[in-house]
Each structure stands twice: as C-alpha cells, then as structure tokens.
Amino acid sequence: MNNKINKIVKFIKLGHIDYKEAWDQQEKIFSSIIETKINNRKTGENNITDNYILSCSHPHVYTLGRSGNETNLLIDKEFVKKENLGFYKINRGGDITYHGPGQIVIYPIIDLENFFTDIHKYLRNLEEAVILTLKDLNIESGRVEGLTGVWVNHRSKSPKKICAMGVKTSRWVTMHGLALNVNTELKYFENIIPCGIQGKDVTSIKKEIGKKFDVEVLEKNLLRNLSKVFEFNFFKDES
Image (cartoon, one colour):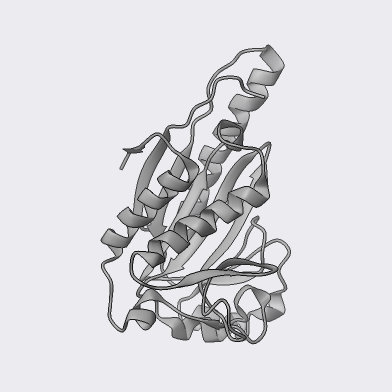
C-alpha cells in the first residue's frame, strides 16, 4: 500500500461530450494511476497517486455493463442507428442504462487507498452524496435493499430510480460512476429495461419538483456533498 496519502481531488469539467471521448479520457487517467502504483511496488518508490472527478453530460447513448444482458435493449440496432443514438458495451459493472442531455454524469477516478479500501462503502458514499443533494431540494430519496443507486419513493412498493451507478475497480482505483437525472427526457428509458430491473420506474428532479432545475447549481451542490462524504481536502478546477 502507498504510504503517502493524497486526499486532494482534481476536478475536470468535460461539458457535453461524446461518450466514447469521455470514456477514453477516463481510461487514460485510470491507467496512469495504476501505472504509478505498479511502479511503486516494483521499485520501492513512494510516489503519490492522483485522484480525479470528471463531470459531464452525453448525447443520447445507451451503455451496457460487462454483466449486462443485451436483450434489455428493447430496440434493434437499425433503430439505434436511424435515431442517431449511441450504444456501447463497456467495462463497468451493472446492466444497461441511458445517458443524455439534462443529466449530470460524475466519473470519480480515485485511488481508494488514499481513503479506504472498501468497494461497498465506496458505492454507499456515492449514494449518500446524491441523497444529501436531493434533500437540499426537499426530495426525499434513499436506497432499495439489494439494488444499487438512489431511489425516490424508496420505502414504497413502487420506487423510482433517479440516479444510476456502475463502477469498475482495479488495484483499488475506480472509474465510471453515477448518472443523476436532472432535466432528463425520460422517454429514452422506455427503450430499455433500466439496469435490467423489471417493473421499476425512472424519474428526474424536473419531474419530482415540477420544473427544470439549473444543472450548474446542482453540479456544485453534488460536488460539495461528495467532498463532505469522502472528506476530500478540496477540488482543483482543471478545466
């Protein structure tokens, strides 16, 4: 384990960006952090590992996790192409989800050995940051037993997912992350079985409060709550 602990997180605002381009940027950072860790182990050096949070939104795209079932995409590839929708099989956990305009997508690429080595705790912390952010808007949300993500009406028999999550980890380094529906066009979820879970609805902040919400304001609030939950020292804007 790296003895030099680095709790500084560099924030990179990618803006509205093609999914594959953002994925490539993630992979580049992810590989760099892992390379540092491998080099430390081989040479006995003690170089710190960097931590990043990338924030963005994507054009309409469906992504299928490595354990996902392609039959959960309810439209054929010709329709995907005709409607100019993206579709990628990717290396995160989880099943199928949708990304599009009006969403906040957060990709933490961090070395958990700078914080704690517990994947379960990592996912619960991501959820907690979202729950706190929604609470600021008087939207009550929480967890559903056995399911990852954040849900509205979570104590009822008909919870509605408002934030999806899927991550990849290697050598305690994370990538991928969460997608929070803010002003998202929910009709695009009708083309999939979201996260492979039958009979569960999807919602957005706009739907819950009855009006659009400023995505920039929400992003700041979410980053603040991530900082609070993970006890990051600060964010450094690298945009």
